[in-house]
Image (cartoon, rainbow, N blue to C red; front, side, top):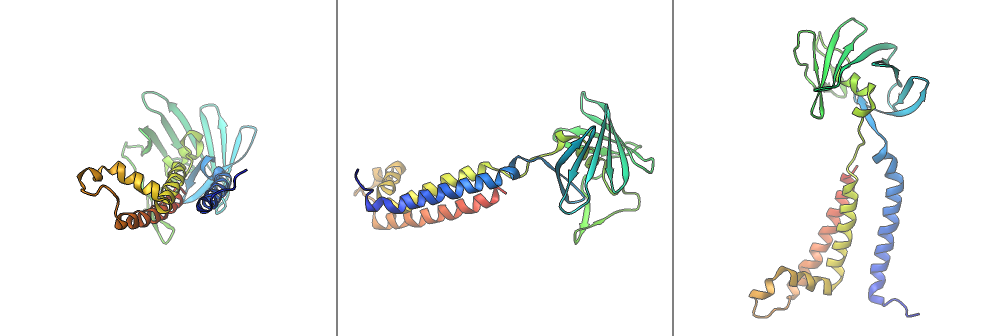
Length: 233
């Protein structure tokens, strides 16, 4: 069996490293990209376990949250306080009633991909909470947990998976493309032909400067690909 030409050895090493790193990243990051999450008071929660009609969600930075399911009603328990959410309509839009321990009542409606909260007078509540140095800043009449946050915690359909895994595939393609642009003169010449610049040149051959710029461009492409991989998380 013929041995691998020396000029292809660096490419083989590069591809082996890329494949190994890609497999490790794929295996280790799979739970991150596939496990639904939601946030309460800036704490990230994930599913922990289910016992009977009670679902428990855990956070590494806060106490667990329990959701008790009872037909159309769900009770969200946070810090020994119970918030009762009632699903009152599905069409034309999903609508929920949220009852607080202080007897305040709110309505939450799903508008497109967003949950909007309204008080008993029909006034829409701000969906944005204010924080200073990671500490919640509240007005006198503001609830600690917004109605939309409680509905999100109560219904798994409003949980989401984080990250953009497609960027990992784009980064992988960018690494391979950048390496070919950096290492292979034939690939550099192929790019030159695809650019159609040779049609307007008297000497239809790439210059040394062109080859140099291809190498620089290949390095830049690989750097951008690595940056894109980190942006996936």
